[in-house]
Image (cartoon, rainbow, N blue to C red):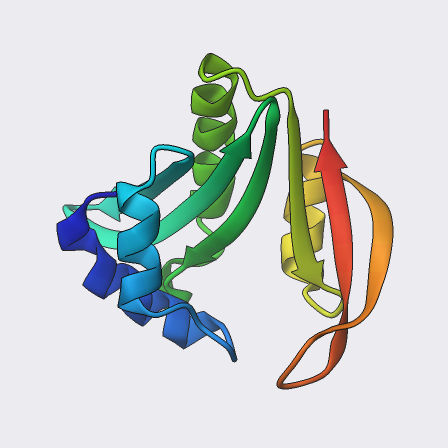
Length: 138
């Protein structure tokens, strides 16, 4: 992800999440050396993104999102797999993420990529209030 991508990334974020990150949030991530953010393009159109913060050998995946009309085309899987490859090259050995309990599609993706549930955060999400499922891949 580059600075010129953040406007479109923020639009995709707003399309898919009730409490979306703003352009400035993504701009800060792009500029931070402890962050790794990637975009996916189809025919030179930005259609998805993924991001992770890295501390020591752990990566906290913060965002994964694909434009609605491109969902179901394995773009999220490709982003996740590429993030893991690049993360390993930077010394990341454990990956963590959080997902809404009701987001079955994302949970199936994460589980199929080797993530497993390690805990539940009661009422973690707002708008609507919902449990957060914490998942990990080592």
